[in-house]
Image (cartoon, rainbow, N blue to C red; front, side, top):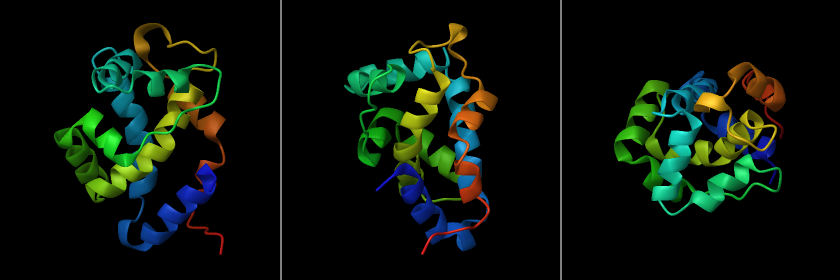
Length: 145
């Protein structure tokens, strides 16, 4: 299943109940990355400490992105962070980690177009949204049958 199919499924299944929570989560994920101590570099350090440094590094490099499971992501970020993100967007923690596991590799990949972490570790959110482009149409409530 492609990223857009997966997001469409996730968004479609909870769109009525959650309102704009999923769109908020994408923005919140980018804000979360930039607000880490060290920005993206700080997030990468968390992945290193959680034993998933190679996975996160694949998102930065120009090669294929390795996947991360919701459980792995939950372990790296920690329950407090996941619960806080879930509360901010009005979703269940398992929904947050499920969606983040799908989009975080793409957000990091789009935020590191030259295969390098930007100076200061801050990703350019406008650039990332422009690169991910097609995601915006999913937030309008359209769902493929």
